[in-house]
Image (cartoon, rainbow over all chains, first blue to last red; front, side):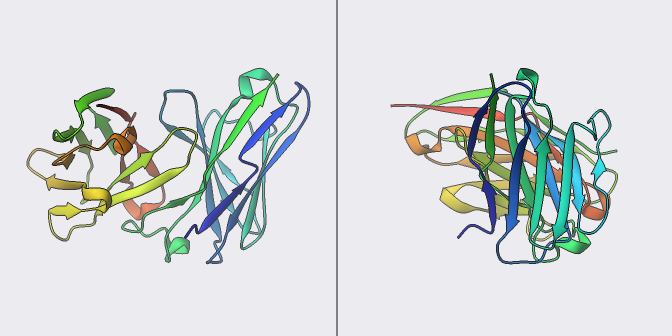
Length: 121
Length: 113
């Protein structure tokens, strides 16, 4: 069964609103989770690494104030797209590592949520 | 630095024929390699992984991949394609220390009836 739950699966909203996406680790307390963005017909791009109890680590070129990440508990990370605009429309996917997630063990596969389709009108 | 190159942006096969999705990687150290499948508007599902054990790795749904260090390749194969195999496939390498996951650009597989 699924080990990562992502909600909502689909969001349509007006330009200027903020949207929150939740990512839950269902079977393991994950101190580290990851957020990806996928443009149509393109690969996944790592946006940031969410760290429980501390600030997220953002990849180069990702606006911290635009994409707010909160990892307040060991099973929940949230991504908030603030003041969303049409160019923010994309497919957002979260993930966590395997059982040894905290170590980010090289040979442990990541488990992905089903993704959130965000459409900004 | 590590990188992943998927040599074909799309592959089209007929149902019942073999599938070959090509992936080359570069890595300074022994890499861990994965193949994921993504169906439309869905998340990613792990097909198989290579982690320095057997070079021929068998995965789910009849897929397998062979790690060839001399060729720095990790091609994904399946003897007989099904319509349900139509999806996007990503070759992935984990960086040294496993902290960063690097995705290939993806290969879209089309399966014709």
